[in-house]
Length: 317
Image 1: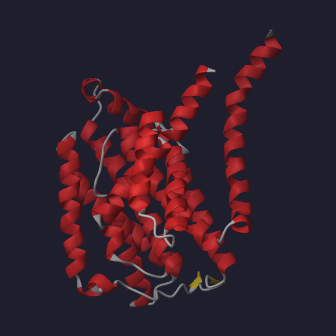
Image 2 (image 1 turned 180 degrees about the vertical axis):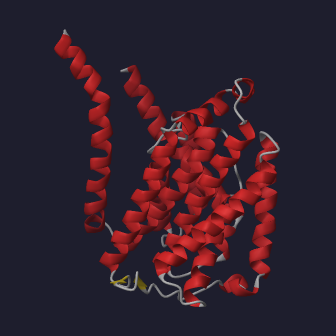
């Protein structure tokens, strides 16, 4: 009986060790199984979706403005590298800090509202940011910032070598996901869940709800900016498409398909959508229509998203 209890109690610890080990193994073999640039794009969007999930899945805040941080950080990073000659890692850090600052400003305004009013406020602010980026002289309007040099990380590691670039992108992905994991499982993360479940009760317990929501918004914006800045280094271009409301809609779809409120769900959703877009882009099929049909099918069969539904069934089993 004691041995059985010990075995049962040790299962969560084994799972906590197995999941990171499996993730690292996949990161090692992924460029051998698929085109490295495709894998790097997937990692950037998986981090983007996971950062958004921190806000929607764990705090209960639906933002339609996260493309502002994704594309805005990309613009800052691209301009810093191409116009100022900044070292790539420093430029990524600068882009991440810029996204964090934008998140602080947008969040301070948006958290004054709740529910659909919060979502509409973020949409309005993101549209304002879109037109600012459109008119800003350094963004080159519809042309974007093209041919961004990758350079050498720390002046030593040539990022034009696809292997070096992949290691950097994979490292940034692991760092970002590690931060998200720590936030989710910290006391701060538990308060965010309490706010998601019952904001009034959390407020009655003495928590400064607005400060926690603003903190979650800023962290999510910063990690989103990290993903956007990294994507610019991979594809060497920053465009208006990355700050459009359609990009915000795409990341919402990624989260819902994979399962909001789960650690792996957004990454699964991002992988599904990016794969579909990649392989159907040259076939002539209407990609958006197919994605819409997949979303409808998922809503009808996987109400909690793919990962959320599978996890629920495993718990019941």
